[in-house]
Image 1 (spheres, rainbow, N blue to C red):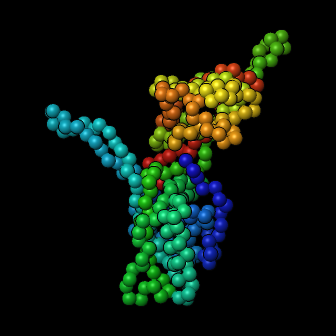
Image 2: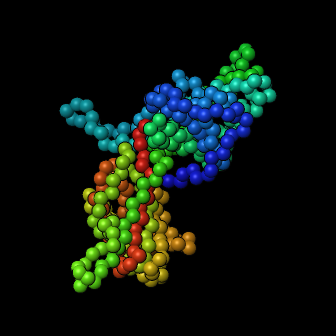
Image 3: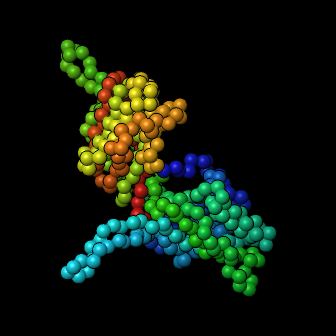
Length: 320
């Protein structure tokens, strides 16, 4: 999943000040911020910034909404056939103020642009940070609500807007990536004094933990040498193989890399060329990692010194 990597930029005319945790519905004490598509970070719980969150009106931070498909049961009731996660809507009220009308209008317009540009330039990210240092964020698009109250006296040096943010992916994401590295063990001479491996993190059977609440779709990077690459989820039996010979490349040589993304399915050689034809279609299943421990096998035929597999994903959660 693409994540914001742009540097933190101070938004214009904030007035300074730092954020301290405030109570938010469905969350508890936390600090909230919004990163717009340009990478600018806008504090949402800092009263000194010139705007702050009206916490009593915040909603949509809890568990993911689902649509349930069921079949009638002959003895009464129903049986759940399928649960489908729905897009999420988050309501976030903001109070904006200024010492003068011009200062207020400047802040109001800047915030409106920061949110509405998600409709033209891609999503922004709403982030909730806990006092213990953990963070979760979610990709958002502006839907409605930046109109002001429209009451007598509002819009002069202050006003409030109840913004609705639409989230096509309803799950919260840990911005800290989980990385797993496995490499081929190199054997020393049998006589000096017995075989050893260079690292305990070797290729073969292993366990990968997904600390999140829902399935994640990882990205794999394979470093050669290797003639055939096979990844198997021993818990489900699902697997996929990649044969470099199927795209006319020949065996993956030492130091050569190929990256496999599972959502959406893509395979790229290190020069950017498309290697999706190297997968063993139609039997290939680019499987995900379920919450908890996942027993998997990394098999690289023709491996040698330098052969390695790097697995990366960002845990996903039901709540902020």
